[in-house]
Amino acid sequence: MYLYHYYESTGLPFANLSDLSVNEANAVLNKIKKDKPNSQHAQRHEKYVEYRRNCESILRSRFIEKGGVIKKNNPYYMTIEHSPWLSTWFENSAFIKIPIEEFDIKTLSFTYGDSMPTFSQAIVNKKEYHNQLYTYDEILKIIDKYGLPQNWNDDGKYGYERYIEVHIWNDFPINKYITDVNGFFQIRQNI
Image 1: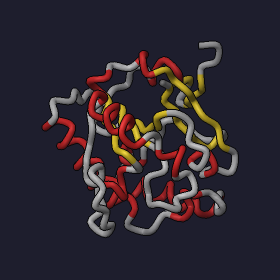
Image 2 (image 1 turned 180 degrees about the vertical axis):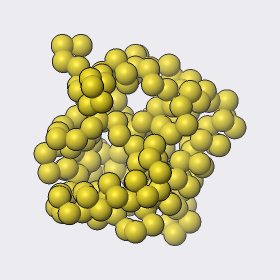
Image 3 (image 1 turned 120 degrees about the vertical axis):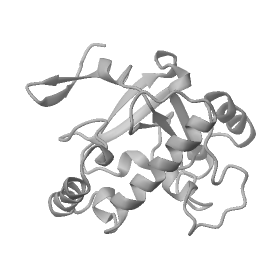
Image 4 (image 1 turned 135 degrees about the vertical axis):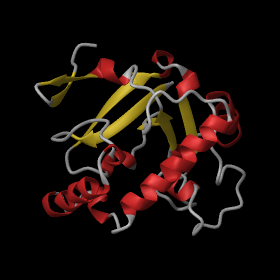
């Protein structure tokens, strides 16, 4: 099994707006709206940063309740296997693919679908995986039952579930794939 991270090839992989102040995060979103108006991220609403932080608070507290190990305050985001739809979010899409065996699975949490709609009170969904956070062993059972969403709902016809979102609560092995050189992150090649 591989985990994928998608990003703008001219930008930083594994960047998380929640690592910035609210004002800085909103400034980044406004810059994306100006510079990359056709990207999915340019479509974010004005309260996105507030909603994102609230969602991450839910992810964090639920993961701790399940005995998950938190080694960083805000997670890195990936998907289980390739998501054709998510790869179209960027004008110049790139990805990093990492085998799941490289991760400490005690530092991984999962949602069946994007975490924002999964925990949104505005979305009514009676499926068992709505409003749920999973550990590695738990998500394997959900995959056995429903399959990968990108295989049956990549176009979103049947709801928000288009991929399985992975939350990495640890810098390792992410730091093995990117390196900070004079303040600029670069993807490590030949890993």
